[in-house]
Image 1: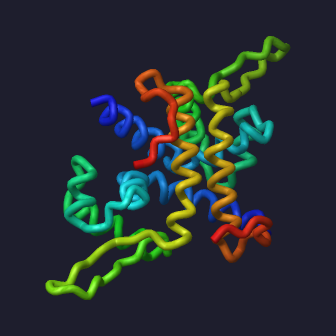
Image 2 (image 1 turned 60 degrees about the vertical axis):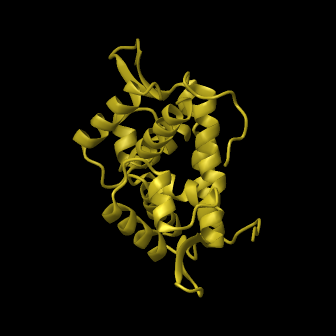
Length: 113
Length: 113
């Protein structure tokens, strides 16, 4: 029974990560990009609507959260939670796999910006 | 330029892994399930059509391959390639993340903050 629950969660997690843009958004946040406009600039091809939708999904999953920085004018940022930051191991494993198996990959260094 | 190619490959890889069923099919193959009917039985809810389509996609990506076992009657099996088996690190990282962060998962052995 618990195995079935776990299996469903596994599938849900891997599908979430594989949703279009989700992996690259998390990678950008891991790399220190936190503002909506900076995220958009860092991810070629993403639309405002899609970025907003993905950030909402990540917030609903407890992976990212919206932070209001009390300045004048107020600044909104999107930061990974601890749960979200912990995904770096998953994304690093994807990068490592690509570096091993892809011809076009850069020389295998651990490349996180 | 090479970074852009790599970024596109990264996104493609993570979307492939996140395609519905793909992660669970690979996990079943890693666990020693290789025949179509056994894969279908191991993955509750998947249809024949979807399983066949996913196996074709994985073959096109060089992750899985169709093996003809010369017996009477001939047996068809689906085995991971070296590239495919190497994905175990990615899938293990997903499982580890779930174990750490999911309530329904078994008790986390390693508590990372």
